[in-house]
Image (cartoon, rainbow, N blue to C red; front, side, top):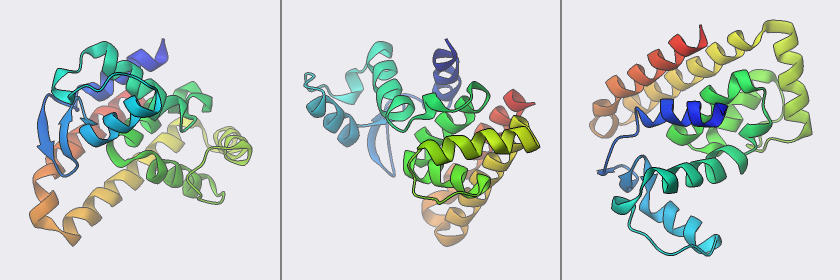
Amino acid sequence: MPFDRDLANTLKFEGGVTTDTGGLTNYGVRQDLYDSYTKTNKLPHKDVRELKYGDVRDYYESEYFKKPKIDKLPEALQGVVFDSAVNLGQGRTIKHLQETIGVKADGIVGKDTLNAVKEYIEKHGDNHLKVELLNKRITHYKTLVEQNPAKYEKYIDGWMNRISNLTNLSS
């Protein structure tokens, strides 16, 4: 299944238990967001340090793949967009996509966005769109570092490795 492939690729960069700018995380899953997810879905509370692969898979599929409708995008785009949603957030990621394809950047995948993606790919190809989206991420990362080097400079090498990995998958 493409989602499992994309998740495996993303999890290479979402390590174990850590505390980063978003707080306590495991597999890139923030405690506060996981608490909200379990409450909404009437699941038992769980400390993110105790998460197993199945928990992580279900969470990411629900919150970062289906909820933002990445699963409705062409399969060729899903991995790059999903990874960005995990790393940058769904709203920012969908806005980057919408800015690139020339529709209103509201952060919501709807009929207009899906039609514009299809038209963009017909005109330019899916690889071109993936490269454009990766370039937007690079610009975003560089802006973060320029605006607050003390907070973000330590992440730039990891972010660029992530982009390089996705670029290699896109070729």
